[in-house]
Length: 427
Image (cartoon, rainbow, N blue to C red; front, side):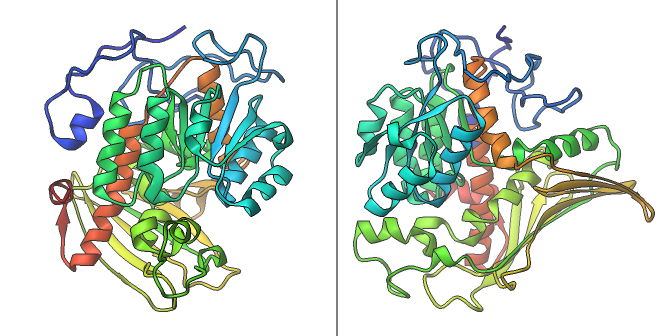
């Protein structure tokens, strides 16, 4: 059963861009509910998505997927065919999770570099049966039903637009892009996508059971009105980000693709490429994007690339609520603290990928561990929604969180407070 809802007078893209609603033609399918998949009764509606009653279909547990009739390229009783565009560390990892934890299969892989192709063959279950392509356009022309886009950030807009044109369901890694201009490209493409397409970003916290439980408790008013959000992304330097060219910018496209993570132009900087996970949680739990931001950041340790290695940004949300972000890779390799806290007059809710806690008093704390890796939750949700013909287009939401991170980056670049309207006018 597909849940219908009335069309909003303004699209999500128009809401972010501040333009009048367009009347571009869509597929004839009705808009489906934009609710997250409920793991348990009582999971709250995502505040940044249109409202609607969620489907209460049970989470599938069959060993073989039986796709709905609208899923292209898959006969009844066959597995969903997923293509991977970009077999780097993250893309290969996501493909491993899809192959190991869902009924879907990795049917095709697009990758430029021989060493990554060989690594993908060895690491991804069933990859020996997959078709390998050098050109991502050849993969999109094949009969895969869905694609995982895990390419360098500066290529996201190009690959996303092509996947929408090819009418593939899309799981694209965060962030949406490294620039405002490319964010607008992705927003436009997502807004033009047929309503039958499922589009999601790699914000796995949105799918984690501990996060959904914490959000549901928050929505009951358990801690009162949120006064302040505090998030921190503290860890050591990732060795994989060290470019082969050292402190010299890549001279050709191949080098830019290989070493994209060390450079602001190709990765978006620390706040956009890494800290964005926590920024997305703030937007989700606070139900809005910030109105402005100010902050500082710099380079204390890094001797290569041009990304910052520490940032401290304050985001000003509607209702006089502030969100504080501390992000750094200056910690020793053994230390890691990646978590979020939301403070109200009656308590504090703390979240992380491994647990969530509800503080009611000094000695009154409820804690629960995550039952599994939240990245598994994200790919399982992706496959399940396609199988059940319950698509959700999160394009505007993914762009909104990316623009929030870019807002913080611009505030640091300019050394002053920057408003949302200012970044939207910047490109």
